Image (cartoon, rainbow, N blue to C red; front, side):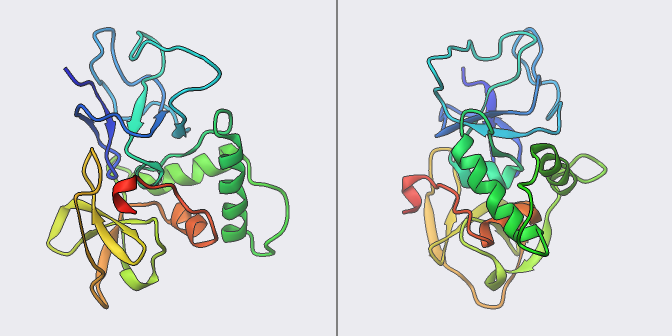
Length: 210
């Protein structure tokens, strides 16, 4: 049976056979029987490679962090994760540089610390009621790589990519459509992550969107 550790662009954990291109974690979310008991445990939500230096993990080992899986990097960003500073160090540095460009008034200065990024993302991805935080925006103002929902269709996430909207599914993007003009959408990707994408960080996407 599939485990409940596949992540949607809403940040929800679902049980489906597809694993995806990236792994990540939010701390220990499961119990000794492998059942999810909480949606997150720490503020450091990261996205990792599937294999790293020959390390082996038994998925959902008791008292070890819960292995989560994402279709692609754009999905991980929408859910509120950022690149891991260890196994994806180069990618993390690229994200930090784009973050600095987006959020530093002088466009110079020290690289942002992982804790500062995590704290800001945590404030932007969850409401005080601990549900997904979204915000309204004109679709024309959003960069490629952001995830949105359309008016009247709040349950279907769409990836904005190469000037088209691609309908997300756990196994890949199943449909694409032209971007409607002058449309206000709900943005799933946290504001600071969207700003980093706009500043030059290009998230990797599943081949079905290419």
